[in-house]
Picture 1 (cartoon, protein in one colour):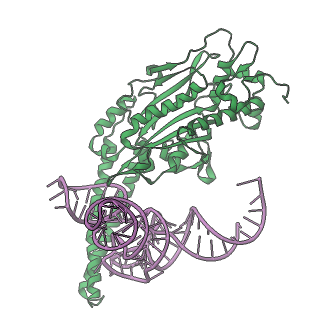
Picture 2 (cartoon, chains in turn purple, red):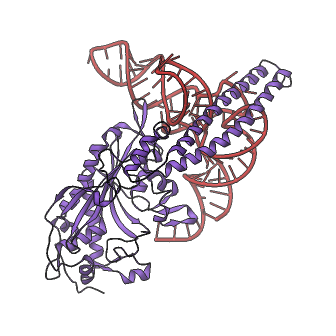
Picture 3 (cartoon, chains in turn orange, green):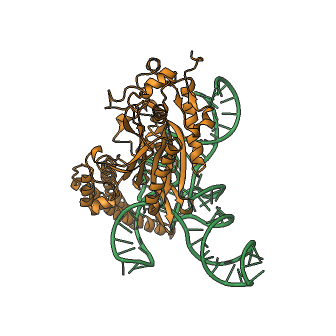
Length: 429
RNA sequence: GGAGAGAUGGCCGAGUGGUCGAAGGCGCAGCACUGGAAAUGCUGUAUAGGGGCAACUCUAUCGAGGGUUCGAAUCCCUCUCUCUCCGCCA
């Protein structure tokens, strides 16, 4: 959410910055609403001050022995009633305006960072750096071909169990998924991240707090009868961990690592990535999340990105880092670095982690502040996948594939998986 | 699911119609005392919004929403949540 003070005082700046996202937003109306709200509040509180004074006078008179039915008291009561009527009217008007204002504000995305490169689509994203040597050969297989041959997962039966875009991992596939989750959690915990395992059903306030609602309701699965939603990312429950809190400045930064399953409806992506592990309604992810002092979010952004990169390095997976342009960053983000892993079978780089700074955008929606001296300031929040597990498995399969049909596993995984090679097993059911 | 109890500031806890944003304690911060500390003493210590260069000031907030009243933490209604016991259950 944007600061309503900024909306009142400098709407031009907002429309200018949103234009960098490719949005043409006329803020004159919302500015008007914001001003209206403040004027009503001013009028109302002045009136209330008068009313309070009358109340005090009546109390004093009665305590000094005046009769509650004396003319003086009756006159004051009458005045009080008059004011009460006016206040009630103003209040209901103010409430309506405030709700309208909040609605509008909740639908506006974050302002892009000054350093976020201008652009209209992913074509305008900037590559920052690359790591590793992408394996480029003809005849390499896609990860689902490898996985199916090795009996790692089951696609068709999963559609029977649930729908398309669900997967059932089996045998070594299930074990590899588990190994990856544990490996990543351990790697990040060792760096000082506090591990949490949050609820995956979250309420409407949580989804609103991190920015998924109200605008993207069609992206999440919903349990209508309970006002609960399946979380699309652990970012949602983690943000709400500290909703409505004031965090002591010396406690910051707070760094969490969370494993959670994630659920996305993937509305509007019919026919895209229908095979394999890339785009599923349910997938596993290890998420990194920071709450920081507002003046430290830029360094934090570099650091959280580098922490996510460390996973790819440890897994020996070539990747590149992309600075998303203003037209491609998400709703809550101010700046985003995507990590894209090389998939030699698909001969392409695929997003495997999104590292964003939301600055005070989520903090304002969720009311998360920190005390700096006497002043309370909104904290800044950052999140990064560290990493998406399914896509990591896809990358491992495609990068580690060998001509004999086996898959070589990165050394770092051996203690978790128990072997350095995936091969067809006779234990298949 | 059944029965009961409760929700007050960072925490504990008092307050059942009048000047209460709220006693007292704990915690925290500053000052004094000390060689330094402990102990002690004094002072200060909620949040949001508005006005003012500032000192400061106005309004709201005692789980949430409504009502009664000139006036509500206190009375009435509705809801939510928490706790205890019983039942069921991974």
